[in-house]
Length: 209
Image (cartoon, rainbow, N blue to C red; front, top):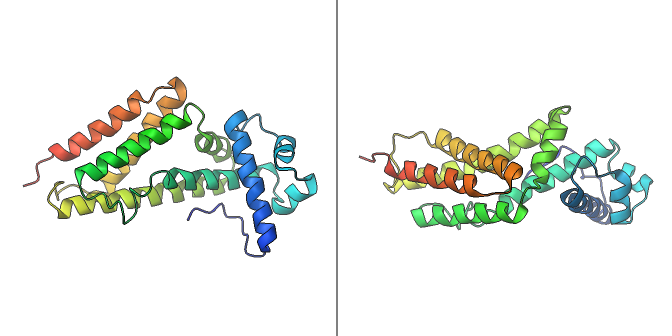
């Protein structure tokens, strides 16, 4: 679970649903317009909410709302990789890793050049520690799931036990993010595919015995 640091514990079920509707509406608006050009008035119009409602649920204004949107988008990054990263996927065979690789490529191919999470993190990260904390949560969960997969492959004798599982998982995440950055600039998934394929080839070619 990725959180933005904004507590919803005191909200009624109706209030929580309203807040969620605002966040999802803001996310949709940002996906279409981009974070820089989306205004609170755009979000109000899309979600049919008043200015007072926006500030009731997000007293910190646009930055607090954008942080909640970033948390939602971070959850989607991981959700779109399921079931490959959970106990059903397990990542304990090369086929499971290839299936995960294909799911990642499809996700970012659908997304195209507009990466709401990347834009939000870039914009918010300059001025809020909460944004950096949220990014850290995402990367930690993602890296942990991949680390578990590497360890399962090591236990099965498919990846060399000498490799540091945590650093290997970190390298895989970095490969994905590098490919996504180029995708955002060029609109092509070629570098993302190359990064994932080469990383997996190197993992498989490292001497096991």
